Image (tube, rainbow, N blue to C red; front, side, top):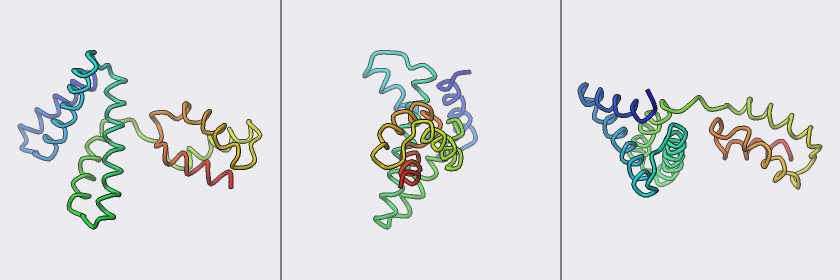
Length: 147
């Protein structure tokens, strides 16, 4: 079963179980998939759907920060709940220690010693961790290692 079918099946199960929050989140995700398919006039495969879910998760993370800054904990909590549902369909993300280990090896292989080489390190590191790590966390780790 591909990811789109899984989303549809889980939405139907959420409807039967009366889980309105989960149903609404899945409905929104399926609508986003359909919107991209209509706009780009192509069928989204597994990789494309996963990429779209990652974008949706990133939007939620940014919204949570913005709502928290504005003191809107009710909206931040709603976004957190949606993020949890979205992340359940994504592969496990790398943690800071895993990213740091890869970055340290890459920095030593490239012979970079200061922040001037950050672009070179990021250029090699990002393709290696694409889809497995948050870009903001990767940037933070590399910046910390090159200080």
